[in-house]
Length: 213
Image 1 (spheres, rainbow, N blue to C red):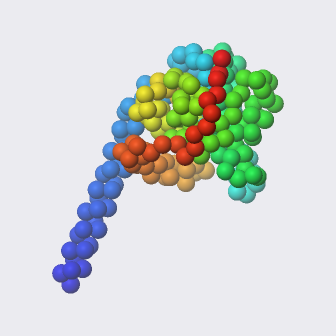
Image 2: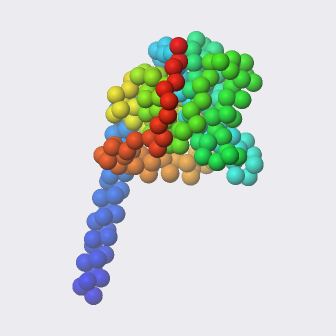
Image 3: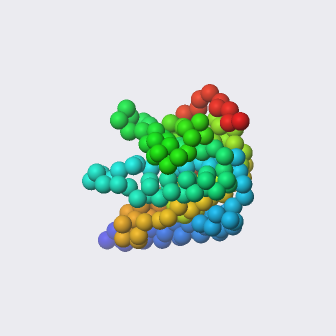
């Protein structure tokens, strides 16, 4: 009985510490990026490049993914406002039939953005990969990240820790009910940020340098 009680106490303490760390991680990321993410385009500086973080074009049920289209809206607005000159679309292309960068490129070209202004990063498997590769592969030490606010905060924080000057342009978010699973997953993703930083995790893939004139 004593063993059971002691084990239960340890489990409860670990759960409490885990909860405290989740709260701390989220607060730290939000506090450090508060002045760098915005949905007001006039508050952003002009940068050569905008980095669009990838997501699937369609949902599992075959419907349109609002996260994808809202990010395309934001990228289009940013480009046509003159705040950026080029766009890097960074996402997952880990299988033959799944290609986030090409889906984003196709959508942006259909919206009138020249194909020559869009660069594809097929190895943006994670936010960390996309952020770091924009610097290491595409040579950009400062840029504007395009995604929803919750995602931008994490991406900008990662960029700051990697010596990158990054700003976030917040795409429209989905309603709370539809985005509940994504928002809950984000809490854990923010904890993993500190794990990756502590252990010096690098992008999974390297590659040849890409020059953006």
